Amino acid sequence: MIVLATTVLGLFAYYAAGYPAVGVAVPIAAALCSAAELGRAGWALGAASIALATSVFFRLAEGQELSLVVGYELAGHALLMAGAIAVGDGIRSRRALIAHAREIVALTSERAQRESEATAHAQRITVARDLHDSIGHSTSIISLHADVAREAVGRGDDAAAAEALHVIKDTTGSTMIELRRTVAVLRAPDQTSRTAAGLSNVRSLIDLGSEVKLTTDIQVPDALPSIIDATAFRIIQESVTNIVRHSTATRAHIEAICRGDELHVAVVDNGRSKEARSSATSGHGVAGMRERAAALGGTLEVGSAEGGFAVRARIPLKGGS
Image (cartoon, rainbow, N blue to C red; front, side):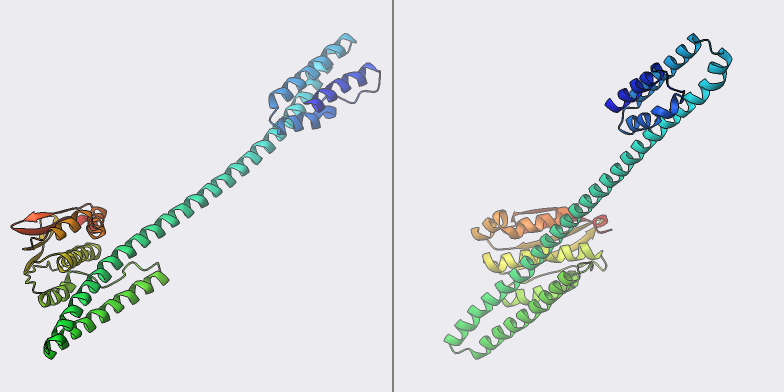
């Protein structure tokens, strides 16, 4: 602003001192462009108007021809001044556009990083749920059969001890296989399927359940989306684990049936222990089951049923599409 004002006043002083004519637009064009570049286009336009009007007034007062001053030279001076202001404003606009583009790039990068962190967090939660379900179930079975083997050895029942140790060996083997699959996915996070967990694997739960005096009756649908299949299996697995850990049940009924556009999963036992009910309402396992069902738009309920305890889940089939 100081440069602009000094330039215009300097031009007036130059002509007032009687020096030869150098025009009006050319001497102040750089100052007009600079002012417009710094966002003072209005001030530049005002200064150009004052300089041009003053020049015309004094030239006419000196007796110069109106046709020459107004009809011939005025348009050229005005266009040159307007061009200088336009160039400065264009430079300012381009710089603002570049700065805005850089800001958009920075915000986009920040958003992508947040989404990546959220995805990684969701993957960690999923892995934690799977490890809780699979390893929790396996360790419960191992602990139970270790007690069976210890008691069998104490009373000299080698056959029962050998059978219990065989179950422990099979359980640890299957657990290691699932851990290897989980680690493989953590090394290659772009994979979408982590394990072969699904309703087709419920037979392994039934076999282990029979060893702890649980009888089961299962009905499995023929085909399901993989995510629904895995979720149903994990719910059943955690329910059986809770029975093994906390319940005195002697039998359990496992059901997985498609009704309409929903998959109904139920695990009902005849155990009456208070520990099972306490675990169902406050444990991390049931919270994880609820989260699994809710992630697919479903619901999960736990509570007393038919003299025992029940876990029931309803999962929309469209949740896995």
